[in-house]
Length: 98
Image: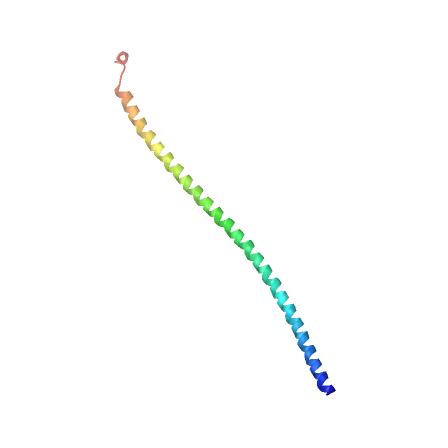
């Protein structure tokens, strides 16, 4: 009976040791998961900043294009006005110039 009891105690001790190891493994995995989640949050924040920067670049590009288009339109308009002005002034002579 004593041998049976000792065998039972040994198995119980082995199971207790195994549970201790499993508990340490679970704790280690939980810490690893926490670290991975923190890294994921950091990367998500970095991605969000990158997306915001990209949107700002696109907005600035659109604004630059709009300004370039307006500048080109003004330049074209002033060329037409200069041609009109040159034609008008050459066809008009003051009475003293004739």
